Length: 475
Image 1 (cartoon, rainbow, N blue to C red):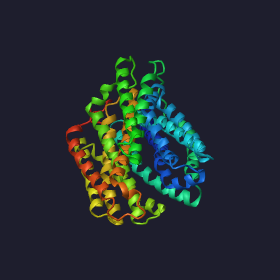
Image 2: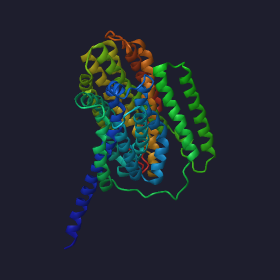
Image 3: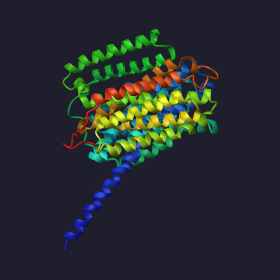
Image 4: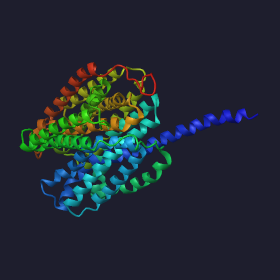
């Protein structure tokens, strides 16, 4: 008599749990989208911000780079803290810092307050981003995890395009302050909803002490490397400030490697980077992010300066590019269950090369958007493969650190993409009205890079990726 209700209740409970997991993913995705938006949303508003706050020529780039340098530098430390104290707790702390820093940036009355707000946004994002992805890893396994990675990967292109669109709309119709203030109500709503939906994981505070010296060294090294890449794009690769930043990065990373080998509880086991899936994931993330950021960077300059598009029109033109990135990520998350990861990575990079080559050969607005969309379709597929490769065999206790590794390569790739392509584009970036083919060299370089990376991926990316929770392929 009592067996029937129990039998019926079990599937219902499973459906409820399944629904709650996807709701949690949606909330975490919104938090991640806020973080992604704040990279590109400032681009369009920079002239208005500079005029309003009387920023000097030297201060204007820091309105963007203060965020990127702090975010990329603190990422690994943030990921390890998430593993130690629980991903949900660090997601909430990061969200509090990020939301408060957004308010500070929006209310800034001078350069100091704005740059402090942007740096704090980067610190909040360094806690939020790897912790949120680690929370996703704890909730999903097997094919569901691949689908979740597909959602996460699609946010990169979607957020970048939405940032350009929102920046144009808010700056034109309201004020540049709203590009920051809009984060406040969204962040407040997430702070209420996340604890109700996202499950907590047991804290590991008693397991071991945190590797503070290692954290300081890797933060300094990564921050210096990102600063050097950004500086190279504006001041040149041979500039003393660029070379000194790269030298500082090498010294800090070398010291970090020595400290980690002698520490009982290292922040990062250096040997982890030699593991083939992790190396493959890092390589794909580095290349894919460089190509995606390059698409938005060169494409927006070309459409605005060579073709005379307004900032808003540029944002609207990038909608197909964003959709293509999401479509590529979604498709890859589905086919990775049946197609070798190596084949997906190679196909994605070949598509990226074809897309970049299309823009290089036919640099007119319609053809450029088509080419950039084709490239982004392949880049989206590479993002999913990179996440899957890096995180497939990660135990729950290392989810935050692995997530931070992926995100660190993401930031390095973005900075490198802008630095290399801005160097190649050269005079076209500062010309009042460059010719339609002025950016051909940059897009040609992108095509060559993508195709060369496809050859490397054919040997580096494993054919099958195994998950930590079972012996089946994680995808």
